[in-house]
Amino acid sequence: MRGSGADNPAMFPVAILAGGLATRLRPITQKIPKSLIEIDGEPFLGHQLRMLAGQGIVRVTLCIGHLGEMLQDYAGDGSRFGIELTYSPDGPQLRGTAGAVEQARPMLGGTFFVLYGDSYLPCDYRAVQRAFEQSGKAALMTVNHNRDLGDASNVRFEDGRILEYNKRDRSAEMQHIDYGLGVFRAAAFDSVPKQGACDLADLYQKLLAEGSLAGFEVDQRFYEIGSFQGIEELSAYLRERGA
Image (tube, rainbow, N blue to C red; front, side, top):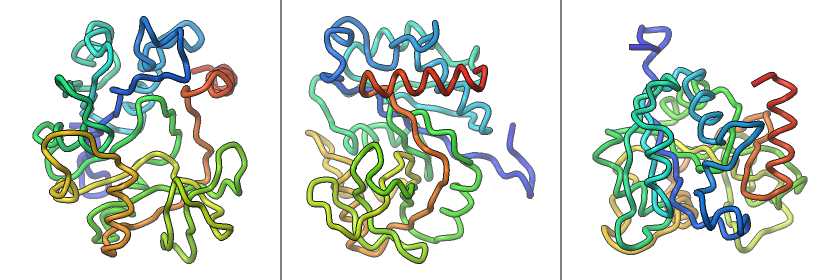
C-alpha cells in the first residue's frame, strides 16, 4: 500500500462532504451537484480526487445527498483517479455536515480526515496527520492566518492553540479562519445523533470546550467552488500549475 513504512506511514482515509444543495450556485446546481461543476474542462471532483491521490491518500468516502447518483456515475470506484472510492448517502433526510460523517463512520475506520466537497486544499496532508497524531486529541482543525482577507476570520489561534472558534459570533481577536480540513478519531462523533441534521461547526465548538481539539496552521491559501468568484480563482490557480 502507498505510504507505508516507518518514515512514511499510511495516510488516513478521507471523508468528503458532497451532499449540500449548493443554493448559491443556482441555476447550475439545479441539474448537477456542485462537485461536477466543470473547472477548465473537467468536473471539480476529478481535480479534487487527483490532488488527494498526489498527497498519498488511498481511500476516500463521498458523503452524498442532492443528485448524488450523478457523482457515482462520474467517479465510479475511483480507480482512474488513483483512489479507492466508496459512497455514503444521506438517505431520505439531510444529515448536515457532522451527521453525514457520523453516518459514514463504518466506512472510515478509527481515524480520518474530513473536508468539504467544494474545497481544494493544497496543503501538506502528511504534516497535518503528523500534527494530529502528536497532539493526542480527539480532533484537529487546520487554520490559516487570513486576517479577514477573502472570508471573515472565525478562529482565535495563539501559540499553536485554538482559543476560540465561532462562525456566527466573531471577535476582534480572531485573525485566523477554519481552513476546511479536519482530522478526527471516530469517537469524536459519538455525541452526534443517529438521525436528523447536525453541523460540523457545532461539533468543533463542543470539542474545543472539552479541551479535545488541536490546531495546526497551514500557510497555503484555500480554494473553493462555493461561489462564482471562487470558481474563477481556482481555475486561474490550476492553469498556472498546469493541473
